[in-house]
Image (cartoon, rainbow, N blue to C red; front, side, top):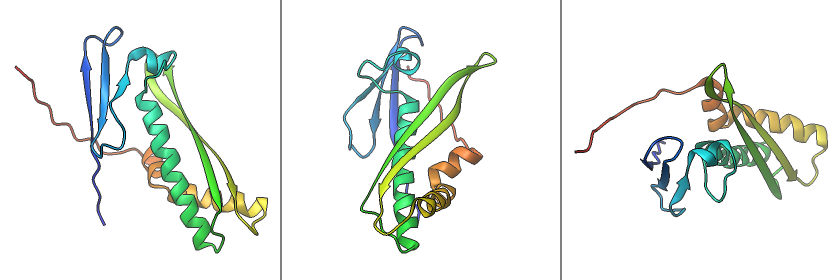
Length: 146
């Protein structure tokens, strides 16, 4: 199995005063506005790359955990995953320093200790966790418009 998903970003102006927008290739969400301030200050109804990374991680992990629980014989009634992606200045460079996953779930017949163990196992198998943990290969295609 191989799946490719696409997104496009457009940016106008300089970093501090400019603005941009994202489009998801699937069309699942409308135009998503982004500004420097929405990354580093108040979101003010706009998004950021970090928020999109957090959304990707939360949804991927929810699926991985659901699958792992089911494989272990404990299909969940429900799972709620909250992801917090932290962007900060480290020695003069902006870096995503941490991703925290908070998960709550209703799983009939499962005790707290088993829930925690299976949660950890699922995190090890989550594709987005593995991408963030080990890095990724970046391909760049550039074209200057006239």
